[in-house]
Amino acid sequence: MTSIPLYAQLINLCAAVILLLGFAMLAQRRVIQLVDLFALQGFMLFLSTLVMAYKTGQHHLFYSAGLTLALKVILLPLILHRLIRQLHIKAEVEAMVNIPTTMLIGIGLVIIAFNVATPISLLSSTIARGTLGIALATVMLAFLTMITRRKAITQVVGFLAMENGLFLAATSATYGMPMVVELGIALDVLVGMVILGVFFFQIRDQFDSLDIHHMEKLKER
Amino acid sequence: MTFSTSGLLGQLFAILLALVLAPLLTGWVNQCRAWLQNRSAPPLLLPYHMLHKLFHKDVVLAHGASSLFRAAPFIVFGCMVLAAAIIPSLSTDLPFAPAADALALVGAFGLARIFIALAAMDVGTSFGTLGGRREMLIGFLAEPALLMTIFTMAMIAQSTSLATIAETVAHRELVIYPSIAFAGLAFTMVSFAENARVPVDNPATHLELTMIHEAMILEYSGRHLALIEWAASLKLYTYSCLGLALFFPWGIAERDNFMAMITALPILLVKLAIGGALAALLETINAKMRIFRAPEFLGTAFLLAVLGLLVRLLLEARV
Image 1 (cartoon, each protein chain N blue to C red):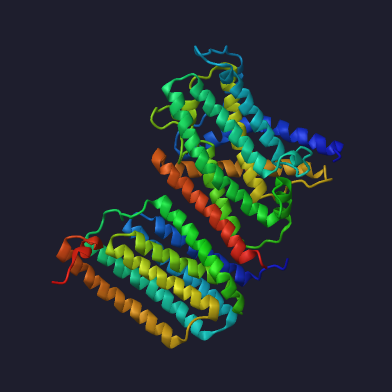
Image 2: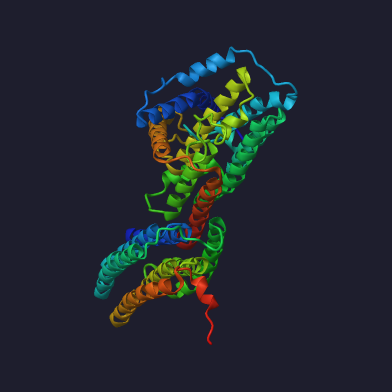
C-alpha cells in the first residue's frame, strides 16, 4: 500500500468536508444557518482549489480560488443575509419530507453518484480525480435540497450549492475550466442572485409568502 | 490455539483492571462535570462507596417479580465483563479475543440491553415499561451506527477482530483519512447515546418525563442495583476503551511483549482521564434534547458512519 501524498490528503479532506456540509444543509432547519453553511462550503472549496493551484502551479486556479473566496464566501452570503433581514424571514424552513428520510434519500444519492463517477474518474489524470464522485454527490444533494424545500430562498441556496458542486467537479476532473468560462459563470451566479432577490420581493408582494406552492395556482387566462 | 502464560496473565489483569477502574472513570467524569458546571464536585471515590453501601443492603423485591428480574443484573454484568475481556485496553495479546470479534461485541451489548429492558417491564410498573421502550428505541437506532463505524475500521484493517484493528491502526503511518474522522465522530455520538449521557439521557436525573436508564432500574435495590450500577460503569469504561482501541491505539502493548504492559498502564490512564474530561465537557456544552429528537441525533450518527464507509471506498481503497 503506497501512501497518499500530503496535498492529495488535504484535497480529499476538503472534499469530504464539502460532502458533509452538503448533508448539513440538507438537514438544516433555519435559513440563516443554511446560508452560513453555504459560506463554509464555499470556504472549503476555496481551500481545496488553493491546495490544487499550489501543487500544480496553474495560475488560473489561483484566480478561480480568489474568485470563489470573494464571491461565494463573502459576497453572496452577505447578499443573502441582507435579503433575509429585509424580508423578515425568521420562521423555520419547512421541508416536504421529514429530515431523517431526506438524509436516507441523500445516502442513496451519494451511493449512486459514487458508482457513476468511479469509471469516469479513472479516465482523468489529475491529482484529485477521486473527488469527482464527491463533486457529483454534492450536486445531487443540492438538487435534493432544492426539491424538498418549499421556500424560494432555500431553493436559491440549494441552487448556489449546486454551483459549488459543479465547480468542484471541474477542478477535480480537469484542473478547472478556462478563465473566461469561469468568469462568465461567476457573473451569471451574481446577476442571477440579484435578479432572484428582486423576485423574492415580487413573490412576497403578490402572495404574502415565499412559499412557491402558491405559484402552482397561477393559470394563463 | 495456544495460550501463552503471559497472555493469560495479561488477559486476567485486563479484566481485573476494568472491574476496578470502571467506577473510578464514572467518578472522574462526574467530578469533571461538576467542576465545569460550577457545582462542588462529589468525591472521586464516591462510586466505590455507593457500591460498597449497596452490596451490604438487603434486596427488596417487588410483588410479582419473576426470576428474570433477579437474573437480569447478573446477565447484564456478565455481558459487560465479557465486553471488557475482548476489547484490547492494555495489550492486544488477548487469548479470549478470538472467541468474539467486534460484531459479537455489539451482540453482547445488545443482549445486555434486551435483558435490562425485559427486567424493567417484568414488574409491570409504568415507569419501567416506559424506560424499557425508550431504551429499545435508542438501541435500535444506535446499533446500526455502531456497526457501521466498526465496519469502516474493519475495512481499513481488513479484519473484524478488535486486536488486529488496534494493531493496524497503531502501525500505519500518519495519514489524514477523512473516513476515520467521520467514523470517530459517529462513534462519539453513539457512545453518548448508549451510555445514557446528556444529549440523549441525563444520568443524574430523576425527572419522570426525561429519564431512560434510571426509569428502567427504579425497582432494583441492594446487590442487584449495585451490579447494575457497576455494569453501567463498566459499559462506560468499555466504550471508552473501544474508542481508544479503534482510533487512538498508540502506546498499547503488542503480542509477545509483556514488559510493554508496564508502560501501557499509565498511558491508558492518561488517555482515559483526557477522554473522560472531554466527555464531561461535551456533556456540559450540550443541552438534553427531547426524546423525539433522539432519532435525528442517532440518524446523523448513522449518516456519518455510512459516509465514512463510502468515502473510504471512493477515496482511499484503490490507492
